[in-house]
Image: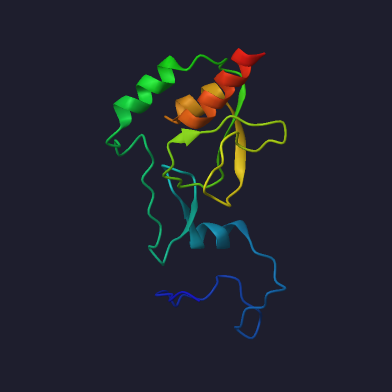
Length: 144
């Protein structure tokens, strides 16, 4: 378990001064305990300072111009579904084309789950097409 550097007890306590997990957590308790990251929306425990969020739009990545070029050159419809890693602070910059089982067309090197977005929404997040998925889809559509 991680080291906690905050010894503040919960705001809600029983009559004898101790807190019980059966007590209802109030909105005031939540607001006194958590902040929400303005960049990624993750809820952060106020006292531990362990959150680091570096979204693509706040820290330019070295290949940002290449990603923008690939986004603009993508030939597939903006409303098609695509897959992105299901991580609030993902440092991945590519989305994947889904197969008929909602898995990436290419073989990814992750066991993480994916979220389905419209291609235009992925582009708005500066997610570029996975080049392997793009080639696979293009080749499949050419062969048909």
